[in-house]
Image 1 (cartoon, rainbow, N blue to C red):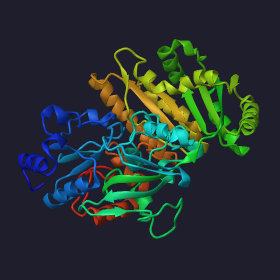
Image 2: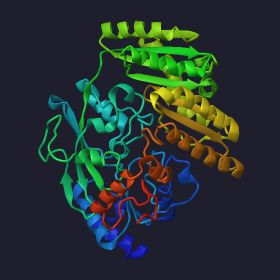
Image 3: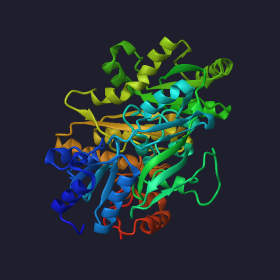
Image 4: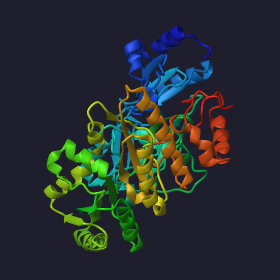
Length: 472
């Protein structure tokens, strides 16, 4: 950075007006962390925060940053779990969370949004058109579309509908030097294109390291008219995983398959005693959607498969009962954080993804790690695509438990790599997983870095994410 902090703040106020610039210690402090455990262990203070909501203003900011070699960290809601929006090298945090314009093109089954639009808000806007944006993160009420694209988020229904990148048709991106490009075709309204190198996919999952995403053109889907929920209970953890494999083998793909282990069940029951989920080793939730006839037929077929291994199963299509059953899965994020007095759930090692065939073994080995490190780990998540959320529960004020949590998170990440999986199935790399990227990707990481250097020659875009700080 070849400009002083004081001059940087004055220049930002001159360029955008004092009302768009946050500079006090308290204001900047709120941008030093996200939901990740790693971001809460050390303070990463930006020099200034700038809140913008136009492509022209973002372009001006990037031209200034490029000229003065100022690091820029794009940020949405700050609900990420890997430190991705934390300014490791200070500089400017670019807050895009207030930029929420939406343009629905229902005739062409797409929508154009700005990066600050929240996932749940978008689906409310689409509902009158009987459309929806399928990726469904657990943080739907907070997660911005810009953040979802930047991290290639997925969620509860990825097993059927896939991840965010499968719905992104085109992007407007401000490059590190301030130039503006459009990917997917400058004027395109097409639902697919194989014209040229796919820059849209390149930016999905780039985590703000290649430019600032300022507009997103998304494909949307019609909402299914009918839905059913099934809750199956298992005395043995592995039987739940084998049951999922059995369902896939007959060619059925539910819209969601979620798991709670025994610890997660206890958390849910403590948080909402009226749930009264029997305390078995595992609970599976199946969601099935489509036409009424298709849902009823698929539900009956899955129920017959599930009954071969489970100790109890319930199938419901009544809206009130479905809501009651699904609550067991919906509350687990909050429930795990409040399960043990004086302790909380932290986001560390919590997003690993295993090959489907290895899930039964992976579940048991995570249990063994929990016992080895003497740190309770609640397991839940998207078992349909192998994406497990492993939630350590600990006292963040206890240095011994902090150290143990860091170690168990590392062990869980390395277990995923050992078993042919990945360190992240939906939350991204940020800086919490940067150290594992070389082991996971090998020489491909060097190619990623070459792309990064070609687009961001001065290294100002979100430094320290994906690649560790200090890489040259």
